[in-house]
Image (cartoon, rainbow over the protein chains, first blue to last red):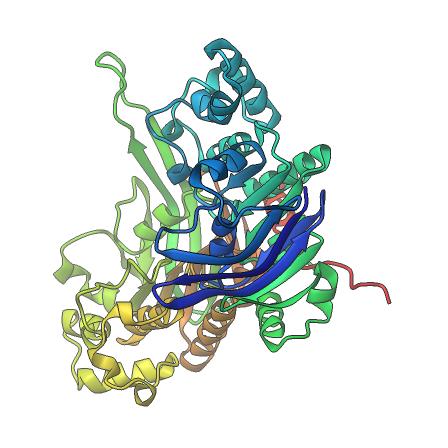
Length: 259
Length: 274
């Protein structure tokens, strides 16, 4: 699935938070959006799935395989979200409902779109739990979010995002809240699932080193604008924009390197 | 620590057990060993890193080192004096020589207090003599918050500052009474990468100027690698490996340390071909 964002602007309370942003990802490609806090990267993702806050005004064009999303009704957007786009957010605990079992939440997108029976939904949830590497899937689907570790909850988040087999996956800082060994496992899981399914991935992060593990191309955002775009290798070795140069230098000064 | 240097902080065989609530009337509560037989020293002017993942016991150990929690076993000494929780009055000597910076500059500063009162708080609480306002101004200037650049900086409230500025305010508060040891519990984790680089070099230069000893608790190998002379690795409550930073990070002997290092994402990506 191809995502084309063209001249996207988001205004909140008279302030332009995303400013004339354009980028596109071809089907099966992996694109990273990187920037510091306040650069507009999360709002860009929310706008793509029509979940920008109510007080935000979104203008410009967002097309999925040519279909314009800006201006669609809430009902139509909900259908796109459920069937074509899967989303994973940073904080798995606040993204999950504490009162519902893991299995019910994993199968939720299917119940909305496929009208599955309870038994079928449970079986699909167990299969999805197994696929994202959750231990003892047949038992874990009956547990509640608070009974899982942070890494397990993020695996649940990924299972929910992927169960309807979306062609586009949007991930906003999905490993930021996790320990480094768990982060490595989750990144490996992302790579495998995206590759196996030929899905398109847009991965948002503030961490250049994480980005280098998962995407091929990068858009660098600063103050709501795309200031530079290129391959990860080019951005790391020959950044052009002064802000990108600052980001890369700061990352090199603080990131672990074995060499 | 190099031979002959003064030991500032020393933990010997520290253990901490927590009894978890009973699940039934007829079974005893389960005991969780949060810290097991941990021994660690920080020398005067030395910088030590304590790394490990969440739940490894590093924060519990640090609380015990600062007399904020009681060890179940073992002992802690600072400058040769035994460290244990007690009345604020009885711990004043320890507070005078230590400062702490926490991870989140948003929740660690009282939103209803002005910057002057926040940074001056240790001076008041510890009855430090001298002109508090002048000491606060000098310290803020040292952490890169020049009073001249902020009109009435001292009268502002934390919400008027960015995350990086707040962390500088927190560092100023931790250092305003000129402690011998600064403890940082994930001091850079909540910050943007450019701000991280700035605070990292600030900590390094403060250390150099004042002979400040540092104990940096973090899961961040990059930070510890840049800032620490020695490093200790914690896993499941135990210190599984410790030694000079370069040795531990480049030639780890424990299997867990190797796994931890292998998991850290790096910037080692090949340059594009011409």
